[in-house]
Image (cartoon, rainbow, N blue to C red; front, side, top):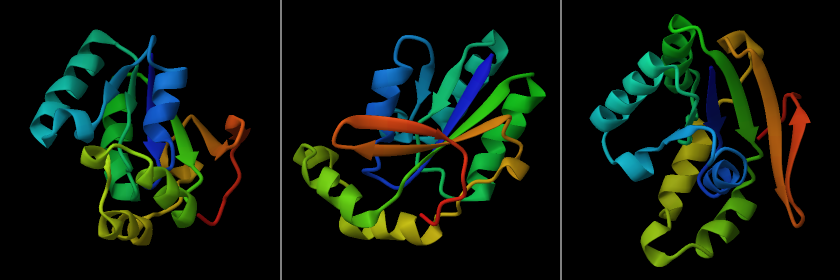
Length: 149
């Protein structure tokens, strides 16, 4: 049983990474898709009770936001994996501009998330923590190293 928690600003590649690496194995919890915290809570509870692997595909910029998922997953015996997506604003904004108009995040939203972004640490309760970069050849996943955004 595995709970995967993504952290990174909008446009960092989180949803693309989910589709590439977890689509066939993990349920996706995403506020972009579910629209309300209530729906997210219902689906999270279902995954926990069914022992279903899941990915939290949100920005999760703060320790407090990540802690609610970590605590719940640990309570149900899940292994918790954190994936921190390199969050360079210029790169994220370029990718954001390539999205369909209805999926673009306003500049103020991206910058607001960046300002709130707290780099995760193993001390939060992750059983494993990785650093993800998105380059011209796709995603690279590396062992954890503290990166300054």
